Image (tube, rainbow, N blue to C red; front, side, top):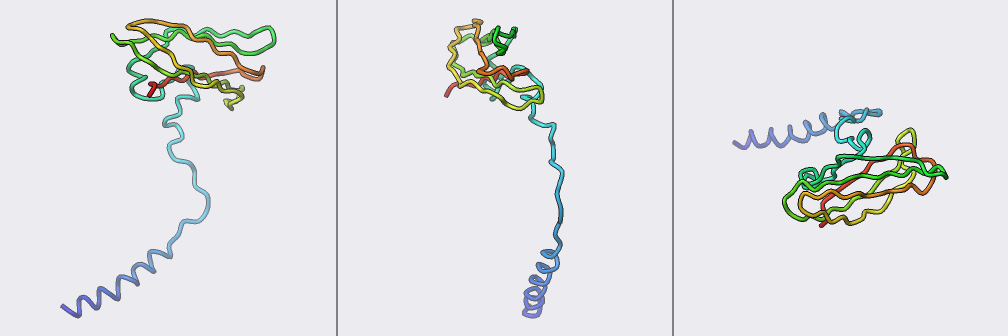
Length: 138
């Protein structure tokens, strides 16, 4: 029994030294870059499961103001049979998808099965794309 413990006590540090010396050098490619990137390709996204279940966007209208700024009007519909409160904002992006402006989250109260319009205007004329984001108010 003592011999087994002695051998085990000697082999454990040796094993740790051997495996600890193996290292992986160099850069690594990112894993799963296509997962959870819905904001890059969609114009309307829900940020949590509650919003995904309760809110939908049946229509979005976009236009440019005379000064070149992008204006977005979204119709947001409550799918529940109860009154809900959500928070909604818009992230304006350039042609490559980089953020150029973001509106603050604003509270939106939706009655049972109601639809309401929300308008967003970019603060500069660099926006070409956008993503409207909605989440359940806490």
